[in-house]
Length: 378
Ligand SMILES: Cc1cc2nc3c(=O)[nH]c(=O)nc-3n(C[C@H](O)[C@H](O)[C@H](O)COP(=O)(O)OP(=O)(O)OC[C@H]3O[C@@H](n4cnc5c(N)ncnc54)[C@H](O)[C@@H]3O)c2cc1C
Image 1: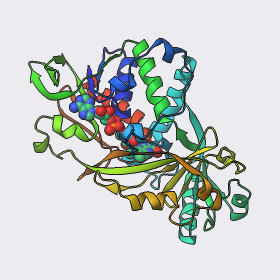
Image 2: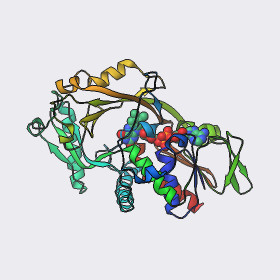
Image 3: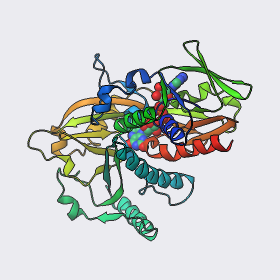
């Protein structure tokens, strides 16, 4: 099998194919940077993600998977049935299982459980109450936290916060660590990583052939096309497919902040926080990720960044004092004319997967499982 694209969707698909006993090549030009398993990486403990600015001082434009904050929001999803709900629940279960098996093989993933959705008005508080009642009836643990309980948290929450919903099973998975450990584990089980760019696909007899930018050609019985925003460009007859796989780019900017000396460590919170659509993710070393903006297109808006930095004008004093140590941006693919995520099998042996929009890290395992099911039942 050949998997095109080593973002979280392609990598988890390749890794799951390998677990199922398939011989797999994963190709992506970005693998040149992330590299393969080396003696150093074999010995190294997972390090925090490195997301940086270029020498020019401009934030680097990363792929969705390299830019992601890694929030896994399954139980707090606003619906309780349908495909999107089922995929979220399946992914939550699979991430738990995959974390355990990777840990047993000496490759732990960095997951911090706990998610606190803050309510900024009474309407939102009411929506939280309805959701908690619904989840408790399903046997899923969600809690309502009062304003008094929140007042005891340090660092202090934004002033307009009037209550919260706490989800103990949702949380944050460090995407960079997950990508690296899956690559290493896959390689140890025979996954071939190829730093190469696919130019086009061609059906040749019973096989699919991938023509690479280098002029080389690789053929296999099955292809997974998971090339993010480039997915439609590589899919033969994509425009004629029904529905046609159209992905709109939505840019997201994010910041890493270093808290001022003397201010409390956000690791004291019961997990990651979400306030008016902005996520606050505690990081090691008294740091905090803040993200991400939702900007249609590929051009970053400095005002959107300012709104993020100031929590829409409601940043508490400790947040205003924190120093920006990193700024990055990445692109998400939002499907047009069909719901996220996108999974299509236009021909035998060809599976197209992506369009996970804001939830690719969460949805990747369930999507990978479906991708493999498509190829095995073809
Ligand atoms: C700022 C930001 C924050 C986010 N936060 C979260 C979050 O908290 N939780 C969450 O679940 N999701 C989050 N997301 C969304 C998530 O990151 C995406 O949904 C997910 O990463 C998409 O994964 P993908 O593998 O489909 O695409 P990508 O990550 O874009 O990967 C596609 C890969 O294909 C490769 N490729 C492209 N063209 C070719 C070619 N011709 N040949 C070979 N390879 C090719 C690219 O190099 C790339 O590596 C966030 C996204 C952004 C931008």
